Length: 475
Picture 1 (tube, rainbow, N blue to C red):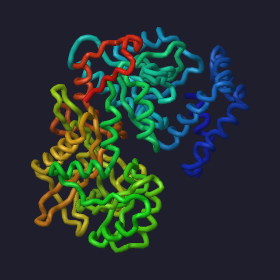
Picture 2 (picture 1 turned 180 degrees about the vertical axis):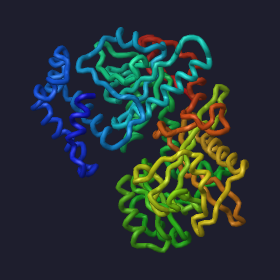
Picture 3 (picture 1 turned 45 degrees about the vertical axis):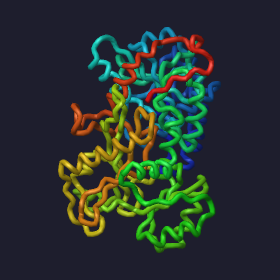
Picture 4 (picture 1 turned 120 degrees about the horizontal axis):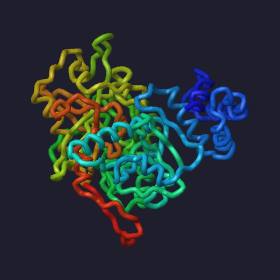
């Protein structure tokens, strides 16, 4: 923590995001050169030697300090502090500090703010354990994909309840995982999911690769939803270079959304007028850098009106849908994302903001003329049903984030339009349970997911006891 704040305090204010990591590395090198001078007044003498050794000899230790320093500069903390051990810990010591007997791994690739995803999952797992009574079952630990060795973790990040902090450490003996899920896999999320899932094929995966692949393909998902009668935008999949097909579609559409077919976090998503052929050509070129692109009609006829400023903002709802013990889909929680204005995608990755779902639904206007839109109870249920049905169409998904926009039909009837699904939902620290749930409007993501995993009761076992090629997947 001390090193994190030493680096964070020395990061210059105006450093652009693309060069922030490089700049932070340079700052850490300066801290290392002056380590004895800077640390001696505040660091216990017994800790000096292992910390200096880690700084000078352990590249991963230094890299993680950089991640934490960047976190401190770019986001307000929504989880307890992270402490990183400069030396490996024994497996026995770590397991004594973990209260449960089932080690659930949250596998990630993009390190900054990972505790914002981990903390709410830990809270939900503890709540699920408490409701069932008896001893705690789940230990939720975070593991970078590069820390995996088969079904074991060579390094873990876990929550120490008694000290109210996260602790990260290398392990002298790897920790056996009993189940796992994937979050924050970065730009190459699909390929990372595939590769790391292979290492974990002997344990339950939430979600498995094949089901996640369906959700990752935006065009395929929309086509499947349309076949099941779910309201989705009219859409066209465009392989690289198909300008004529794009122009033909745009000629019949007043407003367009252009995006990569397998993108994430709003990357390369653009809102255009259908007659703006020059911008369409330019935006498609950017999307085709990712592979196939999608053009679709813009369906967000209802947007968010800021109650303080009166400004209009694009709006997208994220609902988390989980599978219950009896195999049913249940929309349990969610949040809303708003854009910087009414013509910028509603995505945090594009400068947008996450707000509470209830705040969003209570401040709706029609984008065309600013007329107020008031949701009736049936309208709210329509949103929940649309998200639930969309998740059911995707197959074996234990937890999925369904994205919807709001629209009005020709007769001003309310429409909940499903646009995408994410099998590795993030932004979990912002999530609140829906009003329809027992603990509605409280922070949380899913209890059904943990209840279902507990009902399967996978026995803690050594991977050596699993036949080669065996695979256990949780729907």
